Image (tube, rainbow, N blue to C red; front, side, top):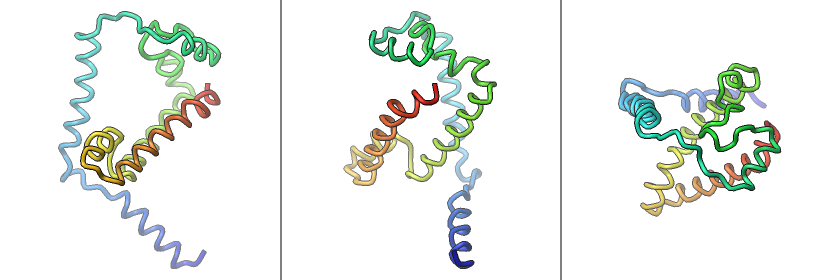
Length: 149
């Protein structure tokens, strides 16, 4: 690769990651609202009842060593403190968080933004993005998740 090509790639990547937080302070309000909404929903709006899952889903998860499937909304094998602070759990969180942030920025919006707003406006890029999200979710569910667990 020539020095000019490397310089162009570096410049493109650095421009892509430039973000003016002061001009986009409202994003922090959205994050705070999501955290506060989750707290209110779990503490005041949830009755703590077990969720109802399809028996096939329960058996599939049991084959991947998930215990107490359906007893809690979040499985301890992924979201328990022991799992989070393990090397595997921390790697999944860091890599997954980076991929979600990068994908959102690269796709020009999040999954719900493309699916709700973009598709309702009949935007072709949103249709392509939603198809990509769906295919990515299927690949994750059927191929990557069984490897990880």
